Length: 435
Image (cartoon, rainbow, N blue to C red; front, side, top):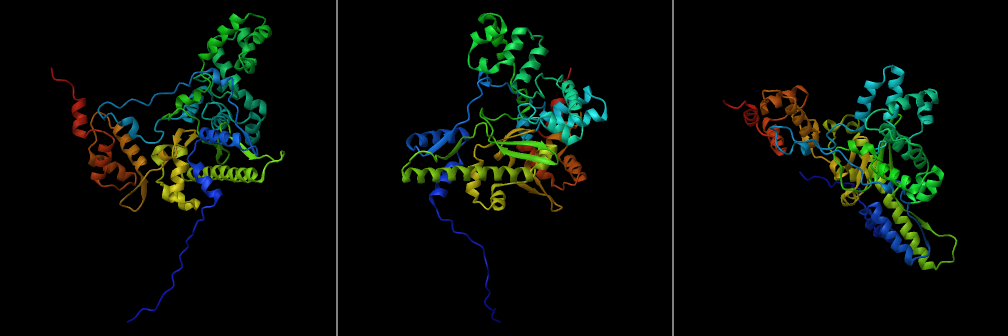
């Protein structure tokens, strides 16, 4: 029997490599700092290009690179790879620390409701990124009440958390160290002069000499301008994040880091040559396309990883570049270029976009769990096992009770990948020495 011919419709797209697209692809892999350097070079040879590079904060430039908490040490008897095996931002983050401190400090239901809103409004630096007026309006509370709770909440350790700006962050640390002299208060009230190195002006304002102002400056340099970064569980390379994620009422806000992102546009004032204007227009469109695509990628990742943001690495969803590319209607290599070296600052720490991609592990009941989540759960069970180590079969049984139907050999494979010894070896390590 002959089968009749069939017509199969398949969607395909041929992308023409226009100048805009070629330029945008070339900019995808650049960090904000690298993008600024490229645009500065373009602006030097093209007067039709108007460029604004965000100015560095002079006051922040006074400080050493912020101190960050070291990753947790390896657990005894479970191998040296334990810290890394926990996956993405595996230890308690900034939000959890703030809430645990505030539960000890505050008592009433109203205070804790306000405290939760304050904690959710903290940037990765540890500062509030919303005004208390906005928070009060969201909660339907008087601003004075929110301010009162904030004043109490700012007593938690380390000093400087929940500050509304750099000045208040440093003020809280000076107060905690009993260093609030009149000169210190004057200097903190004029950080712009301090950042500009105008010590003589500060001395006149404080009614003292330059030597005392210089001594005060040395004390301030010992403060931490970004205390929230101590709770970044896996600090990446020393550079600013490209994407910022914070809690908001009913969800999450995702935005580009404008503090390091250069702004570029076509100069409409001067009499520029048509070729210069055309090149400037192509470049501006390419930069805008690069920024829009990066933001779309960040939003898509946050939508997929809300459970991780809420509850940690045990709920990291399976995700890869191919699925992200399909959702965004991009080529997989484009997503790869975007993700290369990109960092996202979240309440769970600053992580690379690549770190949030984890392959899916199929369970026997047809569900899927990410490899990171599985490793984290196995490591957590072993961390809580007590004096009698759990065998791979016992771990498998506990995971099955949680709905994760995995083979014993799968448990053994991931335990081995994390550098965790077998139950027999862990038991031998804990055995008391023979007398």
